Image 1 (cartoon, rainbow, N blue to C red):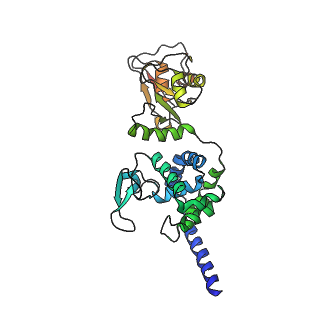
Image 2: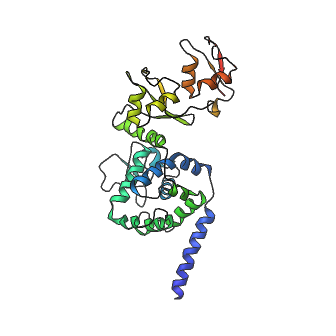
Image 3: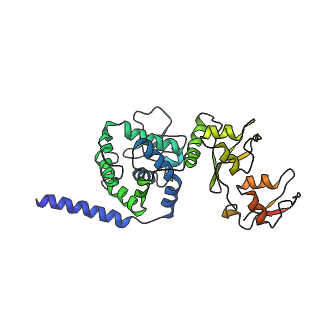
Length: 306
């Protein structure tokens, strides 16, 4: 009995020690902000708590800065067993161990989900509620995911410090953010034409020759009428190759990094093409520069962006 209580005291002692050492950092927060929607997408597809995915990802990858993450896009420390894809080597429990390597972070997150759902070792975890992050954390340690004796406590401490369990309650996710991450894999592996770019709190694609709002909208499963409206165009317009097509309503200003900067008008540019370039609403660009809608810009004009 004394031995039992001593073990319990040691367990609580280690948890409080880990919690006390866990300090909020901007680097961790930036990681969660970047990948939270991807974690929710994976939760919807594979029934793995988003909080657990994020906590494992940030811990295993040192917030995306570890050698495994930078060289092989491996955010979850998954080794090569059963893997036929690209590989990278790293000292872990032993020297020069083989780890899986990916073409993008999206691919790493997807493989992590498949790794957990297809392994009998982790099958018991899927009997837990999606909101039971403590059970998942302890179960991952008990099933042998990591050798660290405080692995579960670390995951729980991260989740509670950054309130990641709120994502386990999330019903929807930003589809364009996850498609943006996924398109990095598609572009590399499949040469896919619909690469999604991120800028100014928004997302855009570059039109192909002969593209229309309808063809882009069909590929991305969104309304072509809304797509045209976001880009301040007629829904039936034919687009030029490489033209930027914004996927959400544009902002009123350029990003903060453009504060104090101006755009110098070049030959062939219009107020509309400049507004599209920076993801700004056309009306807002006129307003920022105290110009009337009938003003004809000239080469060399300087336009404020914020």
